[in-house]
Image (tube, rainbow, N blue to C red; front, side, top):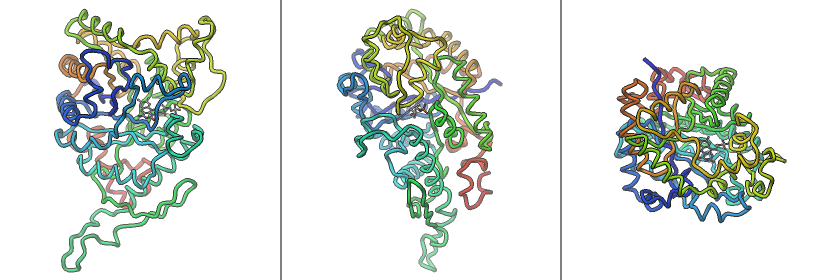
Length: 461
Ligand SMILES: Cc1cc2nc3c(=O)[nH]c(=O)nc-3n(C[C@H](O)[C@H](O)[C@H](O)COP(=O)(O)O)c2cc1C
């Protein structure tokens, strides 16, 4: 049987995520619905009907303000603002689903590990083990200023902080509470055995945490760890810690390069690469016929906002407005390095299949670009080709008009992929970790760095 594709819906609890300008489309009422619980409840049911593995909630802690050195372009187009807290939605979405999982983004640069560990333990309890944490180090200068800093912490230093942050988190999740600590012993008047609840007494370069963890152990203890990043530091961090890794790139070949590199790095960290799933992006517009899909895509392209796309590119730390004044035939180059995310910057230079001119780069922001557009069979062909050429395990599915595009995907594309044996007809049983890695059990495997903090290693099976 062929390998089955994993699918996450790529989401954000905001008016607009990656669908720049699409709020103007008559069928997109997302900017009114994103703050409505009923919308998210229906959304969760739709994804479970389509056997999606998870909904992946991206999150940021500031406004994009690099483009034109202003917040106005992103605010004007609702680019990831207004934006609500994704973690607060999960309970409601979990209560109407049984198998859909939830990945929630939290930054290690701005939030404290002690509070974050409790948040994820709580979510893991309430979802019965259907929770993942997307670990990010954050790239927005405005976020730094929202959390009391003058400037962003340097790129590589952010990953050093993240590394210690995870060490603290593992101690809280894996080491603090023994199994069976809640003994309910009426004779001795003891609900929880104090001998089985331990301080962690972490003292490192960035964090000092006494403990114990406030939550008792949840089904997965440590949530499934997600990460994205293509810089050297980012890949190494992912290879050490993550179980699900996003790899972005303009071509399937470049994605395969990063995926292979991360698997190799994981080996060097003593981890079995089979315990890692690699995801990339997927952009699809499907219709019942080719003509319908093309018409839809044209309508989407008409309302697309290149300004919002350029504002989002500010995540790289580069202001595209500076190139708008240049001769379009000049080669596109960066004159300095930035402390932004390397992934976005590399898309237009190092990762591009050929050297681009300024004009070619500016043109790229003008349309949604890189979409598979077609009838269900054509879209399934495109997905299959991308899956096989890139060697990934799954995709984060973007959508321009929500929930319309997702409804069409569930109705039209999912049955074709199922028919081809490329997509599950039933969910695996158990927690998210068991669904992803049925051979490994609900806890992290023993070759993961968190396992050394575990009190009883035998539990891992
Ligand atoms: C699929 C995907 C999802 C991401 N989600 C977020 C997010 O929600 N919040 C965030 O701050 N960064 C997010 N990022 C950015 C990464 O966390 C990271 O900062 C970026 O890829 C740059 O890392 P690098 O410098 O190691 O390449 C995402 C990246 C990708 C590819």
